[in-house]
Image 1: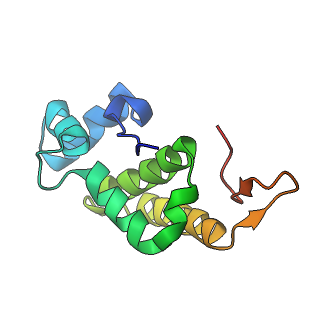
Image 2: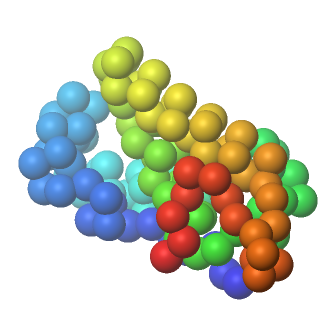
Length: 123
């Protein structure tokens, strides 16, 4: 399975995108580029994949496309808020991401033999 590449529009509405762009001193296109452009050395999709691969190790092979999207979304939101030091939002995104990762690391098999990841809805 190919790891999905998130687009800014997948999880940031226009108002939030503009607010984040204003805080960062970038255009909305600049924030979109940071999230979507694989040539950008600070690409958040790639950084999310690397972070999750390190934290989850070989368990990443059991992630569904929906799981990847959810985890990457939280990582990207965490990093966008962290860089502007919005402490409450940063802590919330980081805690949720950590909780999801802990759920994956304690993965159980359900009765059908499918991997069930606590805290992540199956899409």
